[in-house]
Image 1 (spheres, helix red, strand yellow):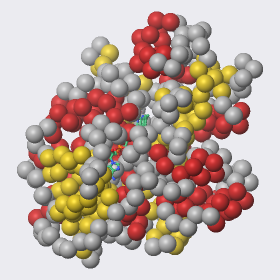
Image 2 (tube, protein in one colour; image 1 turned 180 degrees about the vertical axis):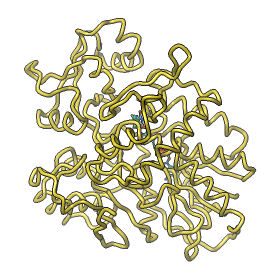
Image 3 (cartoon, protein in one colour; image 1 turned 30 degrees about the vertical axis):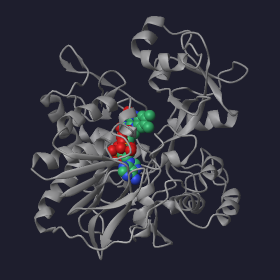
Image 4 (spheres, helix red, strand yellow; image 1 turned 45 degrees about the horizontal axis):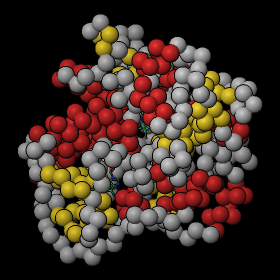
Length: 470
Ligand SMILES: Cc1cc2nc3c(=O)[nH]c(=O)nc-3n(C[C@H](O)[C@H](O)[C@H](O)COP(=O)(O)OP(=O)(O)OC[C@H]3O[C@@H](n4cnc5c(N)ncnc54)[C@H](O)[C@@H]3O)c2cc1C
């Protein structure tokens, strides 16, 4: 095999498409073709495509959301290149929604312009995944299972170890792309599929790669936590259309259009809230939110008249394996892309709809880098003694208790004592080390931003270090 790709979200699929088009033999591995955050993405993907918009304006909004930690140069590159990719997709016939023949754009929290391209209303992610699945069909191989270990020989990648539900086996390749998503479903309360557990992030950390920004987890404020354990995300678009949030006494308590982190904190402090849309135009609800309505109806809630109970849930993880926008790592032939990577473009808070953009740009760039590299990467079946990461990560419930919407230093200090190893420990430690509140990270004992902390907490080989912003 030339290239193995772990993950069939948008990042993995796009790089698979590009590689197979260039004639490389590609094997994709994932626990299910449609088990990804990408498949669930609703709102859309951001890029400055209107005449009155600009890369600079999108850059400014991204930097402002990032609360002092965004990498200006990389954001600029992401936006300019992302814009090209999206316009090209539109030209190729990807079904972005249109109005009078022109791209229909929406606006989301933190964006000062209309620049969110969407497809099928709120089915952007699903449509993107289906589009690329069709394009790679018959051109790449697929195996269902988890990659549980990466085969590294010195500083060179040689393949992966996969678990297919029955046993483990080594599969060799010239290069490997890790596109396995973030770690939001380490939290029990999460909007992600249960595959976003940072399994490969932890495996790569054990192989000496650095991780960073682990304390920055974005929480979605309005999630319906169903009794069967499933989570239904109620998009902020509905608050934009006038839905309100009320507490148990039927009182409003927060500006519904405030930023995600503030709304999440307000709901968290109330111990939960209700989203009410009964006063909105019934036709509008039926037309725009029919899928959401039918999902809620399954649990007995009629959005046109019932207040729906909502509570925050872990939604997007900014941290991950430290890379550049090409997904480059210290292991030659190994790239880490999409939400699995930390590229610093989101700073301390991700601007809505910038994550699909980042994943697409990284897919394109890693493909280009790999096509330059592959002629020099040989295939060799080296002996390997698998060191698989367990799929069940210990200590997960601690995240929901101590590293949720609000964190507290003394609680964190106490709880990390009891957990010796694993990704949960690194997340809790990072939340403890950042003694300030910035972006999505809120410390009850340090509620203000502190300029001393304008930098990144980087973990490598069991130690952490501090990297100030360049
Ligand atoms: C409900 C929801 C709505 C969202 N809405 C938006 C939006 O509107 N706009 C936006 O920009 N972003 C949105 N996001 C975030 C965005 O969807 C993700 O950041 C993005 O899709 C990440 O893409 P990815 O390809 O890196 O990872 P994913 O799409 O998460 O794909 C990861 C893949 O890796 C697989 N995998 C995991 N572990 C392993 C393993 N060990 N071995 C092999 N495979 C593995 C998974 O099964 C999956 O196939 C949303 C997220 C959620 C959950």
